[in-house]
Image (tube, rainbow, N blue to C red):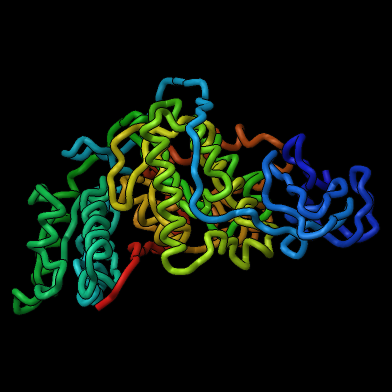
Length: 489
């Protein structure tokens, strides 16, 4: 197969291999070369007419586009604009329920289930980042029993922030401190910062003193000695934790894409969508974020909102993010990235219609603000930008024990939770085997994302059970990035 027409109503197709000018494919003579993953016109498209892919408009033609012409940014423009009014017109999917499979996880005192048993060091302020990093390095000697490792999560915030930014930093750190993958947590403060430990504890709430320790570096003579003593205590406590059978209905999995290409919406994202439908049918939870990459496909999510309340929250999520862009004088469609365009994505609508496929077809059950923990099982939308590190961290903060990350270009990063990299094309999986965990590119050959989604589900159960480590875990690649919007003093 040389090209793929995704939906019967499409007037463009995707090139599955590099096409040369003069070739005839599926009855269409190529007017010019079309790179793999890019679009070509199947018929004449008049100037101002909608270009249709995935059965939906991805923009309009800047000029007449002839059959066999390459369709991209030079002759296609977005139709996105600012804040819109929406009407609740539900098209709720049929409920599907299946018996939950199990994974081998850690049952926490909170009732939550963890898939790793790690010790985390969380700085309240960026000033103590070097101490946190040094403590994690030296405390590796204390790892024993079921403890998977000691990790520090430096960040630049916690002081000189105002209002919502300061609160977001506190919410982010509190969400990580309560994360079920952490068998023990050291909260490391300086002592004079805005986010000093006593203020942070008001946001964090009650904790188990055997599992969460606090240290202000200014309060002790030798912060390294004091920190290592606390970390040794945490390691000893967590070392006794044991995995047990836990229903997959207690899994919370974040969904993210980055470095997408023209195949992402055909292979990797539909594969994750199939995974999502399986997990939700078994009673589990999936979290979809990247709000700007819902623009242009938001009505498809709104139609799936379980009730009017969730619909209204979704409208506020979408329009609120558009207002955030506009407040800074930025256009809402300043996306896709240069790498996305090189891979064949032309407009934000094009990107969004592929991106939202990760959510599958289940009903939207809730919408979470940044830093808010998940409360409702099923599909949740999470407030966060498209930035890979910020959005993936937001998923972990909300409670995701793992993140599924689809990519057509590749990336090495990992967030605090195990980050499963899923390639949209097999060439990437072969080239960057040190980055990629799962190859969804084979869907181009099989045409069956549902079967690939079941394979991904089984793979994730192995990851959750500790039988398999992600490439980012094996390489020690894990970071946090906290969402910032506002003044720095």
